[in-house]
Image (cartoon, rainbow, N blue to C red):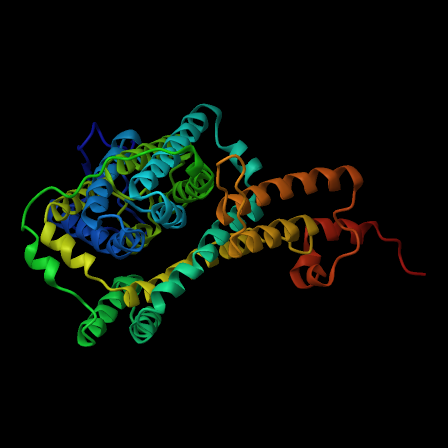
Length: 455
């Protein structure tokens, strides 16, 4: 029997609705009893909360507005994927750098225009994937390219973290240390929410040092709609925003594969819908002043721990988030988080984004003794970290855009030439000398088999 919902907002009760037998999971189209489903939905809100709010705080976007569109986007995702793919759409960290860059030069409304362009491009990719399949993405973005793009976005943000840390070094240090200690000290959901709790501890430290201004809280209303802002558009921003689409594609495809592996259900046919839904949600968010969205790994952790993959829990989570976004005083409290705390959290989060790219390399056993892979990653990372800039004809392309273009161009050009010339295993540079498990790779195994026996 299919585990997909029998019509929207209708889920089959799993067993007796209270227990999950060993080896079983609550599928997307099932649910536990409503009290338990509501409780799990609340866990999803807590899981996404820290990261989702940090993005608007780091970019200057209104936190309550971002939360509002996060809730709307999650419901939209549920509808477009027909309730088959459990996911919460939180704020995307990949958009921080272009939003900050454009906001500082042209203003927030032009950054919103860039977010809309990113979402529209992602939606277009989703439509193509839905009809043409996902294999062309794997060909265009092999693991070495995907890992490089993800890593360079995180590392490009390092100066932004340092600028906030300089505002209050002690508070930033307390925040960083708290996150690290909580991660290894606690098990379960507390350990997975180390960033959220680290921010709370850093915030307390900032309060004790009189670094927090509470005046805006008393002036905020208890109930009301969040602030909405109209977008503006400038073609010069496209070079900063559109490359982020590659990361959003990788995140969404990875999310589909993760859920598929954990539930045992083949969800390949939903991949295009997931990309389309995230793209439209990002367009919607940018239209009103919210940060762009993406599927959240934090919530995958909750699903893995609870074994509940019910999309009903995400509808509940979206409801909670929507309600919180209608409390201006709550948003005002979030907005009081000072620079030192943001700098500490940003140091950890930006580094994590960079290491996520490295993790993609490790998981896929990318062979860096191959000079094609080595040059792809090396050049792309330096371009992004140094924030190379190119401004042709009024357009501006900075580190992330140029690094992304470099990763794609270098990989495919070098691979094509090396395939024709047979040079991909020529004399290695000191940095790429093969060793360890690299010598077990197919390329070196073939060379070893072909080598003549010693006399």
